[in-house]
Length: 237
Image 1 (cartoon, rainbow, N blue to C red):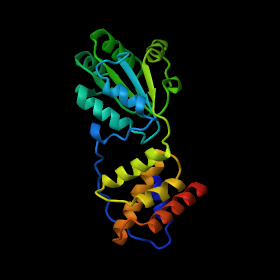
Image 2: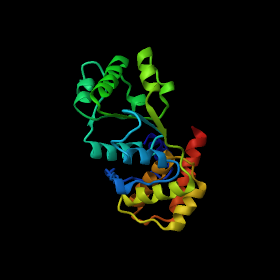
Image 3: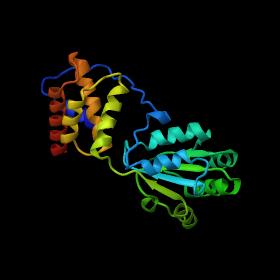
Image 4: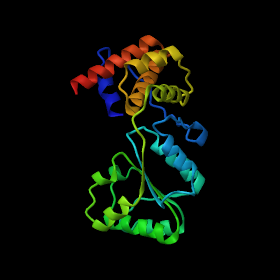
C-alpha cells in the first residue's frame, strides 16, 4: 500500500502507527459480494465444470474480487497454481488437472510456455482460469499462435463498483479486521470517496491504523480526516 505510506509520511504530528498486522480476508463462496457488475463472473465460476470454453480469462481492476473468485474456483476444482515460464512445468500440470494463473499481465509469462499450457488444457480436457487487470489484446504477446488461442478464450470482465457494492466492500473489509462500522459512516464515506476498489482498501487500512494508534473507535471524524489525507495525497501526486 504505497499510497498509505505516502500519506502517513505527510502527517505533521509524527503520529506513531502500530505494528502492521495481517488481516486475512474471508475467501469462501458465501463471502462473495455479488453485484450486477460481477454477476456474470460469479455465474461462470458457479457453473464449473460446465464452462463455455476450457480457457477463461477474468479481467477487472485491482481489488475487484478476481482473487476471491479464483480462490473459490481453486477450492471447487482442486486447481493447481501455475506460472507459465520455461522449465516451470505448466503444460504438464495442465495435463493432470485444472490450473490457475493469476495476475497474468502483472507477473508476466513466456509466450511459448503459455501457448503449450493452453494446448495441454485443450488436448487433455482440463481447464485454465487466468486473472488479469487488462484485456489480453493489450498484453505484450509476440507469438501469433498464442494471440489466436487467447482470442478463443472466454473473457469475463468485472466492472468498476457502484455505491451499493462499495458499501458492502467497506463493511466486509472492516469485518475482516473484526471491526464494526456504523451504516451512517459507511454512507458518509461512499458519498465522498473515489469510486474504486483500491480506494476502498486504502481508506479502510488507513482508518484502521489511525484508530489503533489512537485507541479510538471508527468514527465519522476519523473517516473525514482520512478522506482529506487521501484527497491531498492525490492532488500532490
